[in-house]
Image 1 (cartoon, rainbow, N blue to C red):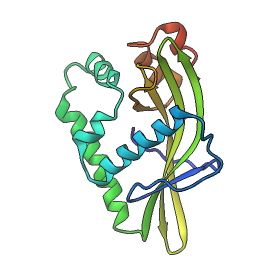
Image 2: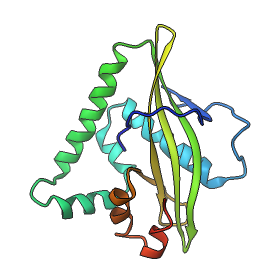
Image 3: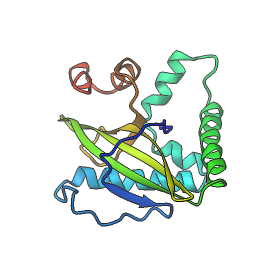
Length: 181
């Protein structure tokens, strides 16, 4: 769930540093899934702002930990995960010291799977720092995954298909996981 650098003009929804959603008529207001994903990502941003690594971990797709333990049995530990998250939060805090403000934005949502109680969306998220009237945008695509028909949402950064597909196939049937592009 670490944010990587990219620029994209498909931004729709803004969440400020205090994590309040703003009004935006471009949202599909009928979509319960996207609204719930918005709310959960907003809580994730709040956990980042609060430097709460334990809370950040709660929002991560749990098969991340299964995958990491299988791939790196000697190096993997809960402490390692927390250290990586804390390092990311420290980087954000260091940038914050040099800028005037920071806020978050959501980009496009794309649904991949809605079958057998499994739902998977891609959502683009951004951190926007402002300094001297200029913006610096860093963002990435996240997979929002629900294995209980949208009751709970967990997140993992969407990188290349070769990187995220083995992770998805731990709990999602191959036929469905292969639908995620």
